[in-house]
Image (cartoon, rainbow over all chains, first blue to last red; front, side, top):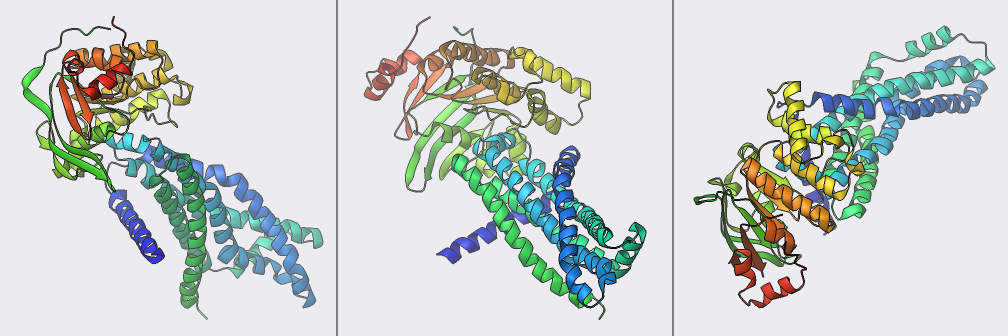
Length: 252
Length: 259
């Protein structure tokens, strides 16, 4: 019974994704709404991402220092932190923040529009609610998530530098030069791509949950909650798969 | 509140429903319904809560699919249309929701602009603004143009809901409980507006209600739903003077003010 429900749900999500791809390239385009959603999702998440990135940089450096100091290898700190931040921490933490902040917001907003018949009202006034509500939001999460990720990686490195600078007299330029020489184009490229994949998952799951919300306010709460839980779960699954693929591509 | 004279073309049915059935899970809601709406006419569909009135207009607008039967709107069979054709047909239909369903993250102006700019893409900014001002003027609410839906009263929301449908100049209006939850004076204003829309925009309307005052003053014809079918059809007097127990029940539980 539970497998049937799960399979039906997966089938519905696949149909929802197929509809997204069939609508995204077809005019008319909702440029204004896409820009508005990019602003809401990207710009309005900056404070949270900055704070989390800065703290992550400080904490990670603080935790790594004793282990490296035991081998007299504290000079590796910038490289180690850069690799950790760019390859794993920044994409994962940014996406989890976006899933929590933006995914729940999308689920609740569309869910509330669904139960108050606003989505149906758009449909009946001969406009396409899917294009206006879903396509714009999914595009915004897909393109804003990698931008936030890159920004977070930078802020994380600034946090790491601040911590390193408190113990050693390292210059900002030297720290970043060392950090950047440790990471490759593949590291950055893979992180951007996986952040896009995570962003797409956050957007599509949030929209799907909101678009299919029912049973009044209880349904809205459930849509918001499910949007966060499912997209976070998907992010970890996708991380596991993408890491395997990237490791195959990485020169030994 | 009395209606002015209206021209009804009994030869031209803009909506034609035949043998309509609809059920949800095990609940049969509509069981073989037939109805014609003629050009220029207001038909009031009366019925108790849960009798399938709202389901009926959602079937007309193509928001639901019938289990059996046909719904023709301006000659086109709704459930046979593809998405593009349905969108085109919906340009002819205005739908007022019971709770108005205004887009709550947009101002009144943006609510009115939303369907207009997406369906008439060649309009200039000035023409869009003119259309919005005209339609707001027609519903008597020009002053709320920059307000958010949450700042409006129930009656104002209904009027803006009507304005949003009128902006596309529909041929057919579908009103779902237009006077529900309003005080008697605001009810009177909404009733006057419905009649005004019929006169000015030459619309044909299906008005879903259980408010007999609304039915009496807006309907050219009344249709009473009982057990998923139309039990009585005719003028207000014809329906409520037949001695039908369901019609009598309905009448007795409503407070009619004869003006």
